[in-house]
Image 1 (cartoon, rainbow, N blue to C red):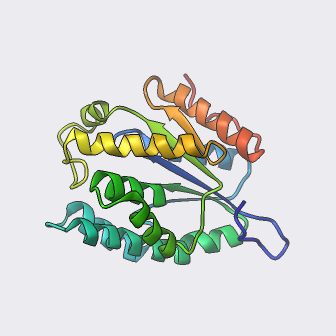
Image 2 (cartoon, one colour):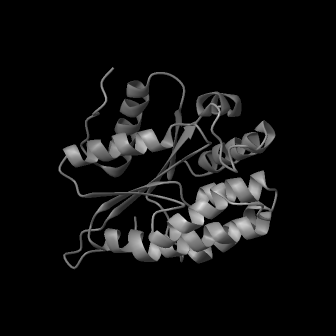
Length: 220
């Protein structure tokens, strides 16, 4: 559980969605947020990179800018996280809110550590320093094959999405590996199939893990 607390002692919750490009993270973040709000809970929806004004500038640079070396890329993502956690995430948790983020530290470790082959342990140390050790209460990994992600993305690709399938395969393998190593902190959801069914599975798992009474908002 996060240590961020309100004056009354009510702790916020921090939920993160991870997975490869095209997995449907953004869609399922929005649907879970709607379920949480329908239950009367206070929720902050955010993303990395881009969850702060500085982060949006970094997002534009790393996803749509020119050539960036792998180490510079990793450091830019770390800068986004440092600003985002200090300016957005910790204050919301301190207010007792549920924070739902589209990507967090695991994405940087997967993309730059595994995908760019910089070394997962080294990249994780940098990212952990950037967020001052703030861990999610729960991470939802939406799993799809790289070729399915490419099919879903169609003809529009940012710098990351344009990488070859072996890059995305390394990322997928990393997410599955860390989730298997810490089942108490992660749930893995099959990203194939009907959106409403995937959403219902996520809502049930999140409610069970965090002790919340939730109902799906997307119907079959």
